[in-house]
Amino acid sequence: MDKQESAALLQRLLQGEFPDDHGRFGSFGGCFAPETLISVLKALEAGVRRHLHDAGFAAELGRELRDWVGRPTPLTPAPRLGRNWGAEVYLKREDLAHTGAHKINNALGQALLAKRLGARRVIAETGAGQHGVATAAACARVGMPCTVYMGAVDVQRQAPNVERMYQLGARVVAVESGDRTLRAAIDEAFRDWVSDPEEAYYLLGSAVGPHPYPWLVRELQAVIGREARAQFLEMTGGLPDIAVACVGGGSNAIGLFHPFIGDAGVALMGVEAGGRGTGLGEHSATLGHGRPGVLHGSYSFLLQDADGQVQETHSISAGLDYPGVGPEHALLHSIGRVSYVGASDEEALAALQECCAAEGILPALESSHALAGARRWARDNPGKRILIGLSGRGDKDMPTLSQRLPARQAGASHAG
Image (cartoon, rainbow, N blue to C red; front, side, top):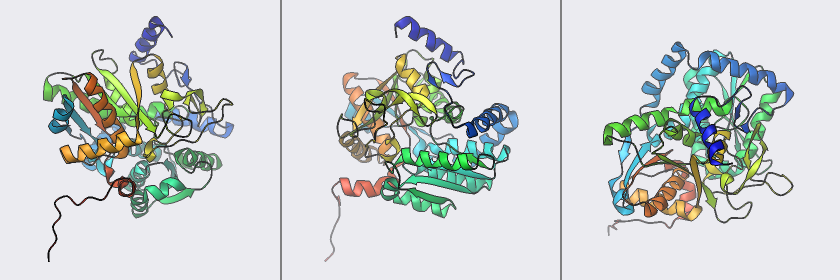
């Protein structure tokens, strides 16, 4: 794609033309779904258009985001990280939102929407467990039962979040088929929805899937970027030189990026899971190594082999362990507005340890990929102002961290 074509697509994006009437972000997106779901998805789109920006719905959502979720979340200067990196570093603290991550913004909005649309129960998928916890909490808040599908691998490595879901009243189904991670959980959630499209509402957790989900999730998560932009202006008198977020399916990243897309002076960088190598099955860096195809109802970049078979992925972070990416990210990648890079498992672990030691903040392994990518960028761009989306807290990752990092008892004393 040449510069003129890219500029034209960017202008159309800024003018609100995407997604178009077919749910497309340029060449990407769309609605590739079983016939039994087409009418349900069209009804969902009509409901979203009717309610999402309705004054009454917006007021209700705004109250709940303020009084229950705890928004706005803080923008925290990170001076010791900044000194280490030779930069000014600011963290958008989604880890301080209720349930511990950005996922609650979307889960609450869709749960309120499901109730308005007359659904009787909610279905969700989860990888790292944060969307499952957020959905369980949101459904408890609005008074609806929910079932959460989670890959059996993720059930093991995210045990604290599984217990939280149970405590919040959710039914958790461990998925033993396929790769037994997020992709398999989404497959099972779709199967459940196809079997009961009239009574169930599928509360999809990321900016992926058939239209209208990528658009709906982006609209609900854009509160992150709107807050961060206003907070940065108030705190510094200007805008950041770059905004950085981790990217799996891409909901926290598109939420942070979207309000900055029209700011030409603000670079945007998404950090994917580089895993343990560059071969298929060793990472989850979809935009870095993938090519276009259809998965879970949407046309976007996928990790697939030469025959078009979607491949298993790897990341130390359960929330980034997905072989696709949201279609709006695919558009932003294709026009060059956002740069997408990878960070390895080891880089993410090192960034997590540095953030803990320097700032007293335990980030999620997902967020640690963003920290790793931002640190690398700072080395090549000294003295810049960096905004990082800290998408969640790391409590959920303690089982993984206890296995991968050596036990330390700094300052421990022994009484005789």
